[in-house]
Amino acid sequence: MASSSSTYRSSSSSDGGNPTDSVVAVDDRKRKRMLSNRESARRSRMRKQKHVDDLTAQINQLSNDNRQILTSLTVTTQLYMKIQAENSILTAQMSELSTRLEALNEIVDLVTTTNDQIDDRTVGINCDGYYDEMMSGVNPWGGSVYYNQPIMANDMMNMY
Image 1 (cartoon, rainbow, N blue to C red):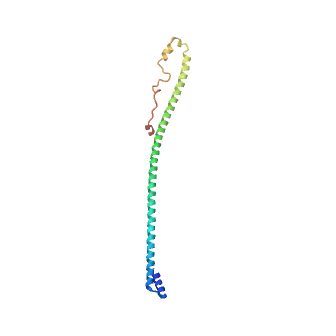
Image 2: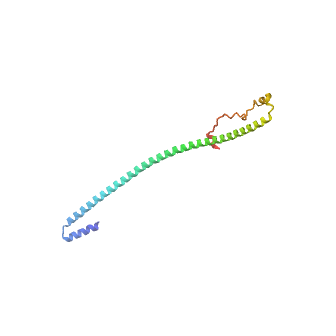
């Protein structure tokens, strides 16, 4: 800056102008430039503050979104675990029912086969009531006390 002002002074003095006027003009330009720089710095600070405010608002919005996503994830995870437990119970019940159905089918086959054999062997016995007395205490379905019991499964079955 000093070089430009000294150049200006030397050219002014060589013109034969008043050196005091040139110093005042240089001071005026310095003052205007200083004011312009201050205004530019103020605008820069305002832009920076606006940017910081925008980033803060964005942080708040993203934090809210993150909280909502975490809540949704927690609810979904709980529903998944509940459905998985129900599925395990239903799978265990299906397995138990399949086993019971196979056992019942075997009993039906056995009773059908046994009845056919008994009928063949007891052709002459039925007439005196002996067969009816002999078969009165026999349950043709195997005599199981569990045939009318409900099927129960619980979450403890999942541990094995």
